[in-house]
Length: 296
Ligand SMILES: Nc1nc2c(ncn2[C@@H]2O[C@H](COP(=O)(O)OP(=O)(O)OP(=O)(O)O)[C@@H](O)[C@H]2O)c(=O)[nH]1
Ligand SMILES: [Mg+2]
Image (cartoon, rainbow, N blue to C red; front, side, top):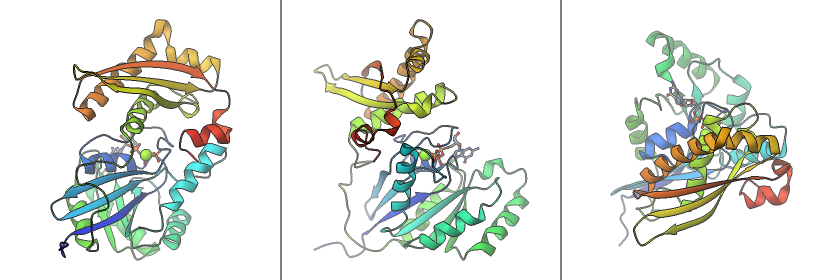
């Protein structure tokens, strides 16, 4: 007979770019599966992270930051995020506690939400004074009757356990949606590409990261236990290719080394990572390419 007390549900993590949504997902899972950087629009896909224990399964849905998108890929990203506002059990609206309240945005999300909205005040480690938090909370309370308001720091881990505990309590009873031993329903290949893309976002500047995408071409477990991975970093222009490769290959080497370390931690094995760079002109505007990369 099915367990009558087991709880399960979907919880979307929504917010403006750069507020710390992906940092929060990684922190909750205790593993890095999504890219985090100090540049806005780091996340491009809706990514489900699964937290299971004996009595519950919470599926957290990380989403691209919502902004006024101009080009094709960004519009696809925002559309994807907006679909995650409905068809869920709970919505975590993440904001940067140190930033001015974005009233129209908060109102829009709360109006469109198809589930109770909790306000997650992130980056409280950046508030100069604790008292400041009270006025921030007051400001948001005037805007909307949030079911919960939870101050956290995704970076330091402050109050994360409490947040997860409250979410678990509020979930409906029901069967698990996924096996209890997986962190995400996405293939390993996708997460590997995401970890490589994160390094490009962290190590390059200006428009370079926005014109890059990563595709894993081969993923092979060898008898020695080493996983051999070949991946291609796509760029939009020849000049960008030069930057990604760097002087005597120094940038590509750095991207590869840092990515390999993260991938090894995730897979728990030794990894041999080979990276290539390829120019695909205007791929961010091309339907076929966007589909192939899972962005549309
Ligand atoms: N000080 C501080 N920085 C944080 C905290 N959480 C996230 N950050 C930083 O904020 C930046 C953005 O974090 P992300 O997790 O990539 O933000 P995001 O909301 O997923 O951004 P998009 O994917 O672009 O929408 C990174 O530099 C993080 O290290 C926090 O609690 N405190
Ligand atoms: Mg993100």
